[in-house]
Image (cartoon, rainbow, N blue to C red; front, top):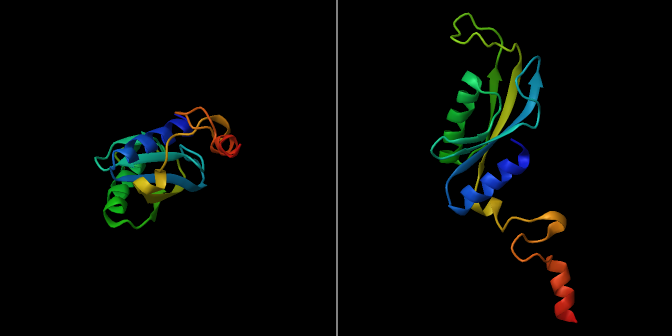
Length: 136
């Protein structure tokens, strides 16, 4: 999944006025499943679009996203993927990721989707060109 798919999902969910949170990997140290900039969009029912790596670490972020949506306060979640003697998962990467989780409000997503060069995907014309045509 690329960022375009994630942002289209964000627009669609925001139009339905559902609560959303956006999780972004902002720092990595050591071996991690995803790179800085990887994103995951989470809705109020816990459904996710995109991934920050899966497994127990992603579950921590999904849980934090629910709290962020309730409180409206962003936070950083440290996902420690170093070996844990009590871990149930044999898939230990050996690194640490910091994931910024922020609430997304419908007004943040706003507007209709835009196509190439700022053109509205509905009208096929950019706002600037229609202003010039109206002026004359």
